[in-house]
Amino acid sequence: MIAYYSLFKIRLLHGFQYRTAALAGALTQFFWGFIYIMVYQAFYNSTSTPQPITLHELIEVLWLQQSFLAFFVLWLRDNEIIDHITKGNIAYELCRPINLYSFWYAKLIAQRLSKGLLRFSPILIIAFLLPYPYNLTLPDNLISFILFIITLILGLIILVAISMLMYISIFYTMNGTGSLLIFSLMGEFFSGMNIPVPLMPHLLKTIVYILPFRYCSDLPFRIYAGNIGNKEALISIIIQITWIIILFSIGKLGMKKALKNIIVQGG
Image (cartoon, rainbow, N blue to C red):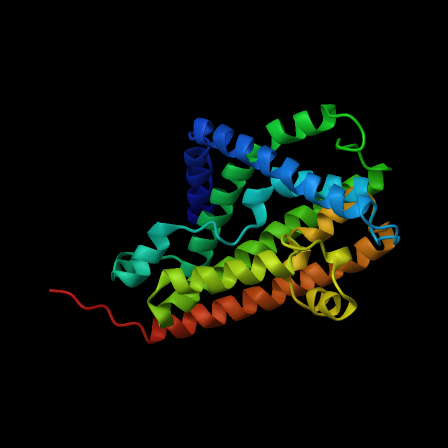
């Protein structure tokens, strides 16, 4: 346990060194946030049909998506892990007296935390200062804010568990690009990044609610915006915990099976 915590701490501190890159990323995400807002504002202005999420709630979700982008996007990858698998350097990892799944998991979650914690505050500060309806406001009550924090943390745990499945799949494909594209495209679409979940057709929304992706970002952000009530949030937390158990079990089993069949060639 100490080894995993030490790796987590080292990677977290290492990520905090890239402040300039984080600031540049925050500015880029702020720019994209305004583009998304203008697109959806045009959509809301062009229709008189009541939508399942108000424009201001949607704008709050968009700002939160941009603020915590590093927490839940699946296209963020660790090239070192990919090289370990595809180039045979995994042999060095296997020599260590550690559980490889837990070791990589600690590394990945520290990587996302460092990137996310450096970027989210500049975007949130500016978003709070904007005029209505383009601004970000505090949740209606303290309970909603607490539920937001809980679901955000659980969502991060789920997301990294899904990322681990992507790296495990590389043991079989030996190609990081293909696995990255499949997982990132699925993650972006089914988490509501391309189309907000409330605006999806009923059949597609049903599929989205079955899969784990929306529980990483859509759930906590809509709780914050007030589009999801506290009762539904509590039920969703149970679903999140269930997904964590399922994904951890699949990941550890998949890693164990992959390592049994691994062949490392060398001179």
